[in-house]
Amino acid sequence: MKFNQPITRRESIQKLLKWSGCVTLVGATPWPLFDWSEANAALTKKGFIVEGVGQSEAYVIKDLMTKVFEAVGGINQFVSRGDVVVIKPNISWARPPHLAATTNPEVLQGVIELCQAAGAKKVRIADNTIDTAEFCFSVTGAEAVANKTGADLILPSSSLMQEMKLHGHRLDRWPVFLPLVEADKVINLPVAKDHILSTLTLGMKNWFGAIGGRRGRLHRDIHPNIVDLAQFFKPTITLIDATRIMTKNGPSGGSTSDVVTKNTLILSDDPVAADAKASLLLGRRPQNIGYIRLAKKWGLGTDNFSELTQRQVFV
Image (cartoon, rainbow, N blue to C red):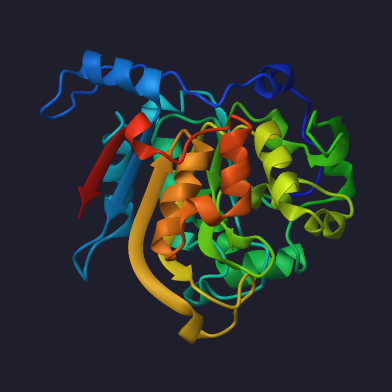
């Protein structure tokens, strides 16, 4: 279902703009081999990162995703009954899924269905695309996922952009895509891939699709601009789609020779850690990626995984 009309402003905007990067995890789901109360306290204190890997040729993405979320107590730790959830995939380019330029529609569908199972009132998909939005949504499979799941597919329009104070080191005011600040919960769902200017595009770079205005201007001094956006948009969680990754000729790619299958999902409440872990899959050192290094320096998170609660799961 597509929407391009203004969404009613919610009082939650003020709350969302004050989000810290840490999510408080509550719940009573048993955690095998662990005392849940102790594990929950550790996650809340330290933050977490989970890497899920599909080892079987016949593995199912939704099963892998479920295991990844179960490692931190389940989707209910992040999405509550009655929530309006906005998912921010990367669907900027009109490329079919097998080219790995955009978030895998199976991953997108899996996240939507988990949110719905948790009792979300509404689940919305929002991205300000580079190619024409309706064409992108159709070619990438996002429209088909929305139709199948009943999620709202938000078409970017000028009526849904509002200039806001970003309080960044470089970016002061900029048009922001309203659904991403009006939601109760936001899930950042990027694809992991190469990028000609920022080296890689992962979770923090994905916020370029959460704003309007003359985005091309931000490609100058791109690394500090990425971090300014990352400190403004504080998602509930980041889930990086590394099922298929584009290792060269990014961000748009266009050839299957650019793509490597990794069958991996990375979940974290730390945006720096999520990107740092994903960068390793592309053969890059996090310390050598400008915006990861800068985000750590400015206090957005860590690339030292030992500072977090770590989990690895397999299907």
